[in-house]
Picture 1 (cartoon, protein in one colour):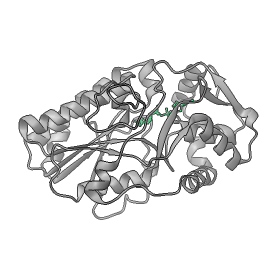
Picture 2: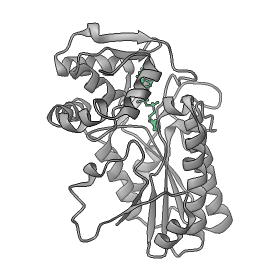
Picture 3: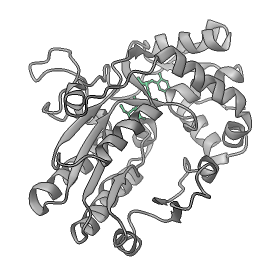
Length: 315
Ligand code: DAU
Protein backbone atom coordinates (compact mmCIF):
# COMPACT_ATOMS: atom_id res chain seq x y z
CA UNK A 1 0.00 0.00 0.00
CA UNK A 2 1.54 3.26 -1.11
CA UNK A 3 0.23 6.33 0.65
CA UNK A 4 0.85 9.51 -1.37
CA UNK A 5 0.13 12.54 0.80
CA UNK A 6 1.08 16.20 0.53
CA UNK A 7 0.79 16.67 4.31
CA UNK A 8 -1.10 19.94 4.10
CA UNK A 9 -2.42 21.62 7.26
CA UNK A 10 -4.72 18.69 8.06
CA UNK A 11 -2.16 15.95 7.30
CA UNK A 12 -0.28 14.46 10.22
CA UNK A 13 2.22 11.61 10.19
CA UNK A 14 1.36 10.92 13.82
CA UNK A 15 -1.98 9.55 12.59
CA UNK A 16 -0.14 6.80 10.74
CA UNK A 17 2.08 5.53 13.53
CA UNK A 18 0.12 2.27 13.82
CA UNK A 19 0.86 1.28 10.24
CA UNK A 20 4.20 2.88 9.39
CA UNK A 21 6.25 -0.22 10.23
CA UNK A 22 4.03 -2.59 8.28
CA UNK A 23 6.04 -4.41 5.57
CA UNK A 24 3.36 -3.71 2.95
CA UNK A 25 3.21 0.02 3.63
CA UNK A 26 5.16 2.87 2.05
CA UNK A 27 4.68 6.56 2.65
CA UNK A 28 5.48 9.05 -0.11
CA UNK A 29 5.45 12.75 0.68
CA UNK A 30 4.17 14.35 -2.50
CA UNK A 31 1.43 16.16 -4.34
CA UNK A 32 -1.14 14.59 -6.68
CA UNK A 33 -0.66 17.65 -8.91
CA UNK A 34 2.93 16.60 -9.63
CA UNK A 35 2.73 14.56 -12.83
CA UNK A 36 6.20 13.00 -12.49
CA UNK A 37 5.56 11.65 -8.97
CA UNK A 38 2.12 10.35 -9.86
CA UNK A 39 3.31 8.67 -13.07
CA UNK A 40 6.21 7.00 -11.26
CA UNK A 41 4.00 5.60 -8.52
CA UNK A 42 1.23 4.54 -10.89
CA UNK A 43 3.65 2.11 -12.60
CA UNK A 44 3.65 -0.17 -9.54
CA UNK A 45 -0.02 0.23 -8.76
CA UNK A 46 -2.93 -2.20 -9.13
CA UNK A 47 -5.65 0.05 -7.79
CA UNK A 48 -6.09 3.67 -6.78
CA UNK A 49 -8.30 4.95 -3.97
CA UNK A 50 -8.37 8.70 -4.48
CA UNK A 51 -9.10 10.40 -1.15
CA UNK A 52 -6.78 13.38 -1.67
CA UNK A 53 -8.66 16.67 -1.49
CA UNK A 54 -9.19 20.00 0.16
CA UNK A 55 -12.41 19.23 2.03
CA UNK A 56 -13.57 21.97 4.35
CA UNK A 57 -16.56 23.98 3.10
CA UNK A 58 -15.82 27.09 5.19
CA UNK A 59 -12.24 27.27 3.92
CA UNK A 60 -13.50 27.02 0.33
CA UNK A 61 -15.78 30.01 1.00
CA UNK A 62 -12.77 32.02 2.25
CA UNK A 63 -10.51 31.02 -0.65
CA UNK A 64 -11.40 28.49 -3.33
CA UNK A 65 -8.05 28.40 -5.18
CA UNK A 66 -6.53 25.34 -3.49
CA UNK A 67 -9.80 23.45 -3.96
CA UNK A 68 -9.75 23.91 -7.70
CA UNK A 69 -6.07 23.00 -7.90
CA UNK A 70 -6.10 19.88 -5.74
CA UNK A 71 -9.62 18.57 -6.20
CA UNK A 72 -10.01 19.21 -9.93
CA UNK A 73 -6.51 19.48 -11.41
CA UNK A 74 -5.06 16.87 -9.02
CA UNK A 75 -7.78 14.42 -10.02
CA UNK A 76 -6.99 15.11 -13.69
CA UNK A 77 -3.29 14.29 -13.10
CA UNK A 78 -4.20 11.01 -11.37
CA UNK A 79 -6.68 10.04 -14.09
CA UNK A 80 -4.19 10.81 -16.86
CA UNK A 81 -1.58 8.60 -15.22
CA UNK A 82 -4.21 5.90 -14.63
CA UNK A 83 -5.19 6.01 -18.31
CA UNK A 84 -1.64 5.09 -19.32
CA UNK A 85 -1.40 2.29 -16.73
CA UNK A 86 -2.84 -1.17 -16.22
CA UNK A 87 -4.76 -0.46 -13.01
CA UNK A 88 -7.89 -2.51 -12.39
CA UNK A 89 -9.72 -0.07 -10.09
CA UNK A 90 -9.87 3.69 -9.62
CA UNK A 91 -12.12 4.59 -6.72
CA UNK A 92 -13.02 8.26 -6.82
CA UNK A 93 -13.97 9.34 -3.29
CA UNK A 94 -16.60 11.92 -4.12
CA UNK A 95 -19.16 13.26 -1.63
CA UNK A 96 -22.90 13.69 -1.10
CA UNK A 97 -22.18 17.46 -1.23
CA UNK A 98 -22.30 17.20 -5.03
CA UNK A 99 -26.12 16.81 -4.90
CA UNK A 100 -26.68 20.04 -2.99
CA UNK A 101 -29.90 19.84 -0.97
CA UNK A 102 -31.32 16.31 -0.80
CA UNK A 103 -34.52 16.30 -2.86
CA UNK A 104 -36.21 14.74 -5.88
CA UNK A 105 -35.95 16.56 -9.23
CA UNK A 106 -39.52 17.76 -8.52
CA UNK A 107 -38.31 19.43 -5.33
CA UNK A 108 -39.68 16.93 -2.80
CA UNK A 109 -37.35 16.48 0.20
CA UNK A 110 -35.94 12.93 0.22
CA UNK A 111 -32.50 11.25 0.40
CA UNK A 112 -30.45 11.73 -2.79
CA UNK A 113 -30.28 8.96 -5.38
CA UNK A 114 -27.22 8.31 -7.54
CA UNK A 115 -29.29 9.40 -10.56
CA UNK A 116 -30.24 12.80 -9.10
CA UNK A 117 -28.95 15.96 -10.76
CA UNK A 118 -25.85 17.57 -9.25
CA UNK A 119 -26.40 20.98 -7.70
CA UNK A 120 -23.30 21.78 -5.58
CA UNK A 121 -23.75 24.89 -3.42
CA UNK A 122 -20.22 25.70 -2.21
CA UNK A 123 -16.91 26.09 -4.06
CA UNK A 124 -15.78 22.92 -2.25
CA UNK A 125 -18.81 20.95 -3.44
CA UNK A 126 -18.41 22.34 -6.96
CA UNK A 127 -14.74 21.31 -7.06
CA UNK A 128 -15.71 17.78 -5.97
CA UNK A 129 -18.50 17.69 -8.55
CA UNK A 130 -15.93 18.63 -11.20
CA UNK A 131 -13.65 15.80 -10.06
CA UNK A 132 -16.59 13.37 -9.89
CA UNK A 133 -17.66 14.09 -13.47
CA UNK A 134 -14.08 14.15 -14.75
CA UNK A 135 -13.51 10.68 -13.30
CA UNK A 136 -16.71 9.47 -14.93
CA UNK A 137 -15.61 10.86 -18.28
CA UNK A 138 -12.35 8.87 -18.06
CA UNK A 139 -14.48 5.74 -17.78
CA UNK A 140 -16.77 6.61 -20.69
CA UNK A 141 -13.95 7.93 -22.89
CA UNK A 142 -10.87 5.88 -22.02
CA UNK A 143 -12.26 2.89 -20.11
CA UNK A 144 -10.36 3.76 -16.95
CA UNK A 145 -12.05 1.40 -14.43
CA UNK A 146 -13.58 4.16 -12.34
CA UNK A 147 -16.05 3.71 -9.48
CA UNK A 148 -17.44 6.83 -7.79
CA UNK A 149 -18.53 6.90 -4.16
CA UNK A 150 -20.63 9.68 -2.63
CA UNK A 151 -20.47 9.41 1.12
CA UNK A 152 -22.19 11.43 3.83
CA UNK A 153 -20.54 13.18 6.83
CA UNK A 154 -17.77 11.16 8.47
CA UNK A 155 -16.83 11.38 12.13
CA UNK A 156 -14.43 9.51 14.39
CA UNK A 157 -10.92 9.69 15.88
CA UNK A 158 -8.16 11.75 14.26
CA UNK A 159 -10.54 14.17 12.54
CA UNK A 160 -9.07 17.65 12.22
CA UNK A 161 -10.86 20.00 14.64
CA UNK A 162 -12.46 22.21 11.99
CA UNK A 163 -15.37 19.86 11.18
CA UNK A 164 -18.46 20.09 13.35
CA UNK A 165 -17.96 17.15 15.74
CA UNK A 166 -14.24 17.47 16.60
CA UNK A 167 -14.53 21.27 16.72
CA UNK A 168 -17.42 21.18 19.16
CA UNK A 169 -15.88 18.44 21.32
CA UNK A 170 -12.58 20.28 21.67
CA UNK A 171 -14.26 23.67 22.20
CA UNK A 172 -16.50 22.16 24.90
CA UNK A 173 -13.52 20.54 26.62
CA UNK A 174 -11.97 24.02 26.76
CA UNK A 175 -15.29 25.67 27.77
CA UNK A 176 -15.24 27.80 24.61
CA UNK A 177 -18.64 28.56 22.95
CA UNK A 178 -19.85 26.18 20.23
CA UNK A 179 -20.66 28.33 17.14
CA UNK A 180 -23.90 27.06 15.57
CA UNK A 181 -24.52 28.49 12.11
CA UNK A 182 -27.98 30.01 11.56
CA UNK A 183 -30.79 28.27 13.45
CA UNK A 184 -28.97 24.91 13.74
CA UNK A 185 -31.78 22.98 12.05
CA UNK A 186 -29.62 21.86 9.13
CA UNK A 187 -29.36 18.08 9.02
CA UNK A 188 -26.64 15.71 7.92
CA UNK A 189 -26.36 11.90 7.78
CA UNK A 190 -23.51 10.83 10.08
CA UNK A 191 -21.38 7.76 9.33
CA UNK A 192 -18.57 6.47 11.54
CA UNK A 193 -15.30 6.65 9.56
CA UNK A 194 -14.58 2.92 10.06
CA UNK A 195 -17.84 2.05 8.34
CA UNK A 196 -17.00 4.27 5.39
CA UNK A 197 -13.66 2.46 5.14
CA UNK A 198 -15.42 -0.92 5.27
CA UNK A 199 -17.58 0.09 2.30
CA UNK A 200 -14.51 1.20 0.31
CA UNK A 201 -12.76 -2.07 1.13
CA UNK A 202 -15.74 -4.01 -0.25
CA UNK A 203 -15.55 -2.01 -3.47
CA UNK A 204 -11.79 -2.43 -3.72
CA UNK A 205 -12.06 -6.21 -3.51
CA UNK A 206 -15.04 -6.55 -5.81
CA UNK A 207 -15.06 -7.09 -9.56
CA UNK A 208 -17.36 -5.48 -12.10
CA UNK A 209 -19.13 -2.18 -11.34
CA UNK A 210 -16.86 -0.09 -13.58
CA UNK A 211 -18.49 3.26 -14.27
CA UNK A 212 -20.91 2.87 -11.35
CA UNK A 213 -21.74 5.44 -8.69
CA UNK A 214 -22.51 4.38 -5.12
CA UNK A 215 -23.96 6.43 -2.30
CA UNK A 216 -22.54 5.51 1.11
CA UNK A 217 -24.20 6.58 4.33
CA UNK A 218 -25.57 5.35 7.62
CA UNK A 219 -29.18 6.61 7.58
CA UNK A 220 -28.47 8.48 10.82
CA UNK A 221 -29.82 11.94 10.16
CA UNK A 222 -29.45 14.55 12.89
CA UNK A 223 -29.58 18.32 13.03
CA UNK A 224 -26.68 20.42 14.25
CA UNK A 225 -28.65 21.24 17.41
CA UNK A 226 -29.30 17.54 18.11
CA UNK A 227 -25.61 16.72 17.65
CA UNK A 228 -24.55 19.64 19.83
CA UNK A 229 -26.93 18.77 22.68
CA UNK A 230 -25.86 15.11 22.58
CA UNK A 231 -22.18 16.07 22.70
CA UNK A 232 -22.74 18.43 25.63
CA UNK A 233 -24.62 15.67 27.49
CA UNK A 234 -21.80 13.17 26.91
CA UNK A 235 -19.24 15.73 28.05
CA UNK A 236 -21.42 16.88 30.98
CA UNK A 237 -21.06 20.49 29.85
CA UNK A 238 -23.78 23.20 30.08
CA UNK A 239 -26.08 24.04 27.17
CA UNK A 240 -25.11 27.70 27.69
CA UNK A 241 -22.01 26.90 25.62
CA UNK A 242 -24.28 26.84 22.54
CA UNK A 243 -23.83 30.08 20.62
CA UNK A 244 -25.89 30.92 17.51
CA UNK A 245 -23.77 32.78 14.95
CA UNK A 246 -24.15 34.14 11.42
CA UNK A 247 -25.18 31.43 8.94
CA UNK A 248 -22.75 29.85 6.49
CA UNK A 249 -23.34 31.30 2.98
CA UNK A 250 -24.92 28.67 0.71
CA UNK A 251 -25.57 26.48 3.77
CA UNK A 252 -27.17 23.24 2.61
CA UNK A 253 -30.28 22.55 4.74
CA UNK A 254 -30.28 18.79 4.27
CA UNK A 255 -27.76 16.19 3.12
CA UNK A 256 -28.94 12.59 3.12
CA UNK A 257 -28.29 9.69 0.75
CA UNK A 258 -30.31 6.69 -0.30
CA UNK A 259 -27.91 3.76 0.14
CA UNK A 260 -30.11 0.98 -1.24
CA UNK A 261 -27.95 0.51 -4.36
CA UNK A 262 -24.89 -0.29 -2.23
CA UNK A 263 -26.91 -2.60 0.00
CA UNK A 264 -28.40 -4.42 -3.00
CA UNK A 265 -24.99 -4.84 -4.65
CA UNK A 266 -22.89 -5.85 -1.64
CA UNK A 267 -25.39 -7.07 0.95
CA UNK A 268 -23.90 -4.61 3.44
CA UNK A 269 -25.05 -1.45 5.11
CA UNK A 270 -23.63 0.64 7.94
CA UNK A 271 -25.08 -0.62 11.21
CA UNK A 272 -22.97 0.88 14.01
CA UNK A 273 -24.93 2.44 16.85
CA UNK A 274 -24.69 6.24 16.56
CA UNK A 275 -24.63 7.07 20.30
CA UNK A 276 -22.04 4.39 20.95
CA UNK A 277 -19.77 5.62 18.15
CA UNK A 278 -20.21 9.24 19.19
CA UNK A 279 -19.25 8.35 22.77
CA UNK A 280 -16.26 6.42 21.46
CA UNK A 281 -15.22 9.46 19.41
CA UNK A 282 -15.57 11.82 22.38
CA UNK A 283 -13.55 9.39 24.50
CA UNK A 284 -10.79 9.40 21.88
CA UNK A 285 -10.54 13.21 22.03
CA UNK A 286 -10.53 13.13 25.84
CA UNK A 287 -7.74 10.54 25.84
CA UNK A 288 -5.68 12.23 23.11
CA UNK A 289 -5.55 15.76 24.41
CA UNK A 290 -1.94 16.19 23.30
CA UNK A 291 -2.93 15.36 19.71
CA UNK A 292 -5.48 18.16 19.42
CA UNK A 293 -3.67 20.63 21.69
CA UNK A 294 -0.77 20.56 19.26
CA UNK A 295 -3.18 21.88 16.61
CA UNK A 296 -5.36 24.18 18.67
CA UNK A 297 -2.76 25.68 20.99
CA UNK A 298 0.40 25.56 18.91
CA UNK A 299 -0.51 25.76 15.23
CA UNK A 300 -0.58 29.43 14.22
CA UNK A 301 -2.37 28.53 10.96
CA UNK A 302 -5.22 26.98 12.93
CA UNK A 303 -5.44 30.01 15.21
CA UNK A 304 -5.51 32.37 12.23
CA UNK A 305 -8.24 30.32 10.56
CA UNK A 306 -10.32 30.20 13.75
CA UNK A 307 -10.03 33.93 14.33
CA UNK A 308 -11.02 34.70 10.74
CA UNK A 309 -13.92 32.24 10.64
CA UNK A 310 -15.42 32.91 14.07
CA UNK A 311 -14.08 36.39 14.94
CA UNK A 312 -12.98 34.85 18.23
CA UNK A 313 -9.71 33.61 19.56
CA UNK A 314 -9.34 29.91 20.24
CA UNK A 315 -7.20 30.52 23.34
O1 DAU B 1 -21.42 15.42 3.24
C1 DAU B 1 -20.07 15.06 3.20
C2 DAU B 1 -19.26 16.29 3.52
O2 DAU B 1 -19.41 16.53 4.91
C3 DAU B 1 -17.81 16.17 3.14
O3 DAU B 1 -17.71 16.05 1.74
C4 DAU B 1 -17.04 17.40 3.59
O4 DAU B 1 -15.68 17.26 3.32
C5 DAU B 1 -17.25 17.59 5.07
O5 DAU B 1 -16.59 18.75 5.50
C6 DAU B 1 -18.72 17.63 5.42
O6 DAU B 1 -19.34 18.88 5.02
P1 DAU B 1 -20.28 19.70 6.01
O7 DAU B 1 -20.26 21.11 5.60
O8 DAU B 1 -21.60 19.04 6.18
O9 DAU B 1 -19.46 19.46 7.40
P2 DAU B 1 -19.15 20.45 8.60
O10 DAU B 1 -18.60 19.62 9.71
O11 DAU B 1 -18.37 21.64 8.17
O12 DAU B 1 -20.61 20.98 9.02
C7 DAU B 1 -21.63 20.08 9.44
C8 DAU B 1 -22.85 20.90 9.81
O13 DAU B 1 -22.54 21.68 10.97
C9 DAU B 1 -23.28 21.91 8.76
O14 DAU B 1 -24.70 22.03 8.78
C10 DAU B 1 -22.66 23.23 9.21
C11 DAU B 1 -22.70 23.08 10.72
N1 DAU B 1 -21.62 23.81 11.44
C12 DAU B 1 -20.33 23.50 11.12
C13 DAU B 1 -19.28 24.15 11.75
C14 DAU B 1 -17.85 23.84 11.38
C15 DAU B 1 -21.92 24.75 12.42
O15 DAU B 1 -23.12 25.01 12.72
N2 DAU B 1 -20.89 25.39 13.04
C16 DAU B 1 -19.57 25.15 12.73
O16 DAU B 1 -18.68 25.80 13.33
